[in-house]
Each structure stands twice: as C-alpha cells, then as structure tokens.
Image (tube, rainbow, N blue to C red; front, side, top):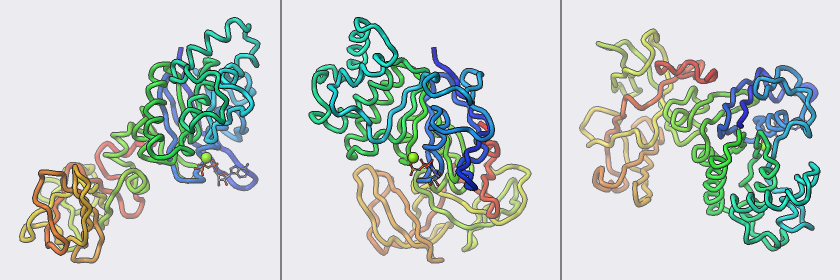
Length: 369
Ligand SMILES: Nc1ncnc2c1ncn2[C@@H]1O[C@H](COP(=O)(O)OP(=O)(O)OP(=O)(O)O)[C@@H](O)[C@H]1O
Ligand SMILES: [Mg+2]
C-alpha cells in the first residue's frame, strides 16, 4: 500500500538563514517525485526534513494525512539512498542487505528469502557473497538500493544516488531505478541537480531555487510550459529574446527588436501591452531563406550530431542563438550563411519582463499544482 506525502508550508532555518521558505508539495501514493534545482537550493535539507534528520521550524509534513513532524526517524519507516552509497565495507552483499532486517529483529529464517528476492529485483543475486571492494560503482549502488527497499519502507528517499557514477553507468542505473520503482510502487522522492536525469525518471518534478518551489509538473509540462524565466533557463536549452507585446488584429503580436511582428494566440486574453521576454527552444525555430520575414541571423558555426545539426547563430542585433535543424529538414548551412529565423508561435513561451512569470494562458498556477 503506497502512501501520500503532504508537504505543507514547511520552513527550515539555520540561525538567521532560512534555507527552506514555506515550501508546499503534495506527493501522490506510488509517485516518483523529483526535487530538481541548483546546488545549495535546499534539496537535501527538504529530504532530511521528510525522513526526520532535520527539524521542521514551521509548517507540517503529513503521511497519508497524519502529521509526522514529531515522529522520530526510526518510527517513520522510510528508506534512504545516499550519494556515496554508505554500504558497510566489512560486510558481504547479502549481509549489507540483511542489516536493516536484523536491526528490526526479523527472525533469521525470514531474512534470507526477503534478501534473495530483493537481490533479484535489483539484479545482483549472483553477487550475494561478494565484498563491497569487489563490486563496480553501479553494483554498489544496487546494494544500497536493495538495502533501502528490503525493509519495505512506505517512502523511498534518494539523494543524488548516481552522482558518483560515470556518464554511461548513470544512464543505465537511472533506467534501472525507474523500473525497480515501478515494480515495487513505493512513493519515492528523488533528488538531483541533473535536469536530464530528472526528465528521464520522474512522474512529476518540483523545480526549486533558493528554498522556494518554482514549478511542479510532469517532465513534459515543465519542459514545454515553464512557469517562469528561471525554469525555462534551468530545464533544457532556451534562447531568450526581448520583445514587446502589442494588441494585434485578432489577438496579440510579439514585436521583436528588429521590428518583426509575430501573431501569438497562447498568451492570456487579459494581458496588457508591455515588455516581455520570449524563450525559444533550439528546436522551436524555423530556418528560412534570408529574404523572408523574421529575425535575420548569420550561421557562426555548427555541430553535426547525426539526428540533427546544432547551429550557433548571431542576429543582426548581436544576440547569440542556438538553433537545431533535424536531419531531413533542409540542406546543411555552411558557416557565414545568412538566414531568417521564424518561430513556432504555438510552442514558444512568453514572460512578463518585470516579474519574469509566464503569460501563457492557463500557466499562472504552476506552483500550486
Ligand atoms: N547544517 C547546516 N548548517 C547551516 N547551513 C546549512 C546546513 N546544511 C545546509 N545548510 C545550508 O542550507 C542551504 C541548502 O543546502 P542543501 O544541502 O539543502 O542544498 P542542496 O540543494 O542539497 O545542494 P547540493 O545540490 O549542492 O547538494 C545551503 O546554503 C547550505 O549551505
Ligand atoms: Mg544536496
């Protein structure tokens, strides 16, 4: 049975320094929920509040609706996987995994079937008699994961569990973790500062900055409709352009610095004419011949990546832009080629220049999801 976690306006202070600032999130039963944000934004601090290593100064955390602020860690029934694995170097794989069960005084004859089953789930049952020094980084991480889940916790917490692994193993292990989580269906809070990893594993992501949640949503939603300029810049690649929003014939026009007007139908109907920031993903540009309407630019350099070519361009106004052209979308453009850039108007995002919040219809409540 999976549990929900309600994080309700929680605050964490170290002396005068408030590092978690009235943060709220509702994590659903069985969900793979990721906290994503830059170093120092408070991810580990929040995870430690959930498991009970950190006190909660204000607000409440509830498990299935029941307040747990005062419940000590060893009564919370949560498993945690740390960045550095923290497996015992002097114990074999199976003794490492059995440890939590022994601590809970599970009868010895019940321990081994449980350990074996979990070792199969994480696919290291053939290594059960090895010592940690005889394991690769990925295998050690599987031991750490097995050890956290063998006690059948209600909640699984993982703090940057893959950051000690090399790039290839990280991808392999993140897929393994995602599959294992689906299989055992434990409510999981996962911490990373790697946006690609977050997009790959999560049901939903909370993007954090500076102790505050910026947006909560599915990976697709956060990528396509970022709630503010910070999220647009932190997740994936975004080109930012200044423009003015003006009332057009039917809805609104974006007027770019070189005078190009692009009709846009996705901004809120009650928007006012004002300065805006437009964010455009590299794949949201259309590269057109130079005589077309749009933003004039020159190809500075390019990188051929197989499925796509990545162009680095400079506009007439001197702005650097990154543009992706997928294989088969047009001929290769040599350095120095003059082009015009248009945009896929339904997909680009528009933010108030001042508040930096999204102006897209229906995107004003990203924090409350
Ligand atoms: N025990 C502590 N005493 C005082 N300040 C602390 C303590 N632990 C963390 N902090 C501060 O709280 C802020 C948030 O730290 P936290 O470890 O939660 O960040 P993080 O998002 O996990 O970062 P990283 O990605 O680098 O692990 C930081 O500014 C940090 O210096
Ligand atoms: Mg951390």
